[in-house]
Image 1: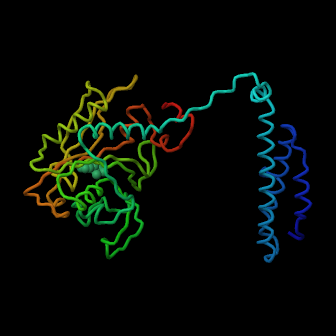
Image 2 (image 1 turned 90 degrees about the vertical axis):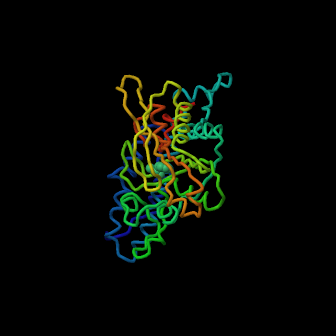
Length: 338
Ligand code: PHE
């Protein structure tokens, strides 16, 4: 650029350009803000200015651009209110105003509240813990072997990673199970609590998986707690949430922190889609190594634990087929859950 643009003159031009009609506003946009507009052109040309002028020029052009954008936004907002229906409602004070939109709680919160209520009635208290966890609580105390794939970069968001000292790692918790450890370390058995909260996994974002989601963990530790107690609790819970007619199945599974481990599926049929089994939770009897890690004698105490995915459950109950809808906060979606 051989000479510098006259910013003041441009400012004057932008402030006085008429924007009182749709046509004028469009002419304004084309002239200054469009891809071939004056400001866009000048911004693109900054690189050609003398090096000592570039910083100042960039700053001034940005101010200019903000000015133009502001003028455009204000003019288009006021053109909108001065035409069409809105105007009629404003002008005639005897007309009934349009109804106010009532807020409602998020579908995830609704499911969470129902889950909490059911367990509250079963005698469970509610506990919570931090979302930023250390290696001990998220993995080691839960009997994850040092090379376990779940510790891998693939799944875990590491906040601090020390190659030679994994015990110093800080992570965004990958499940709510670390809260079990905190609960047991800070108290004396028996325990009967649920632990709802956010968890994070470094997975690619798709209709089925998101980088964060919610779980409700459960822990019951007492004398002579058995697998039958676990089954009874899970079935009672599922019948309350999904209805008495519920069809479920319980399959063997694996988790490092429970032995034996199981998963519960429910049969899900909606609308015209064919029915299918859907996994809603993992569970099992607390592994003796976990009890030992928090100084509880596994000869004297036993327990069960479970963890369920709140998104999964919410999506099936409300027939939501894309998990991302739960995080977009699009009002057209949210108003469907009064
Ligand atoms: N933490 C497990 C998960 O995130 C779920 C689980 C919790 C399984 C408690 C067993 C017992 O998948």
